[in-house]
Image 1 (cartoon, rainbow, N blue to C red):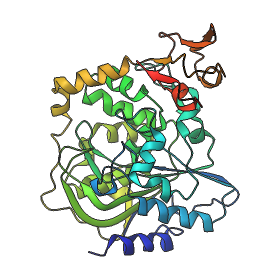
Image 2 (cartoon, one colour):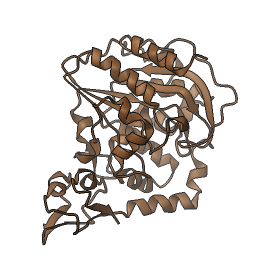
Image 3 (spheres, one colour):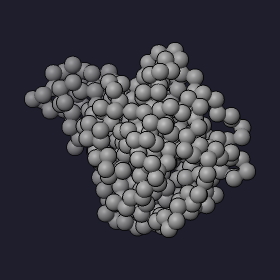
Image 4 (spheres, rainbow, N blue to C red):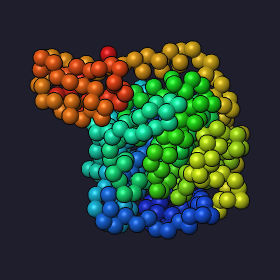
Length: 362
């Protein structure tokens, strides 16, 4: 296997044509060089939580650096790098990027995309509306950098699941809770992805994760970078590499039904060699283990109950939190922002945007 540095340098050279170690594309959309000149580009890595690069929990900084280097050559009008971490690190976007090494790899293009959200219509079976990071919706081109990993609830996480990070704050936990189990959560994943599908997917599969991800200690040297213009095609390849049948994964079925792509082998052209990984360890198919985990369910529930509260010793009554709240859940009372708990969608944009760090979660 080539060293990661060599593989990633090849990525920087070949990214324009999207011909990497392994590359997939759908028949319906021929992959052309991504046209970014004069456009606003958002690069979204997988930043589940603050973890070191060696843990393989997040996109490796070398992958991000190679992509940023290449994009710089291609002349975008603006370049932003950002993500919203998972349920363990709400309000800690910058800290997570620092610890993962992604802040340095972003070369100054990092932006806290959690401090401004736009309310959009969603699947009313779960929530009428959700807050999506404004940078995601306003980008002309979105480049998604998923990590090759397993997931206890969705079995695997890749191109489609990486878009769950377009939701800032505890909305992710709220949707977990409202889904009630793996079958419905698979639907949620596809619904969130459909809000703004990225334009290009470059998957970090140099060191992958097996076992009970997405934060498992069981790592595998794979030595590949995968790329595609279609998330369903990409995830179908990842699934088959893991020894999974993509047709049995709920989020894949839902994405195909939404006309977001096709996982059938005849609908995917593979550039490179697709080989299943021998004895790859996967979680129980369907996420049954996570569903039956009482502690996990209680933890998710506890995260959905969090609400922002201002510290009167730190708050300067600047009203930034009130102005940025996507659902107008905050109002000023006696020079302090107060939240309407029923209106709040737990996106915690208020905490992200507060210049005095006066907002805490209680």
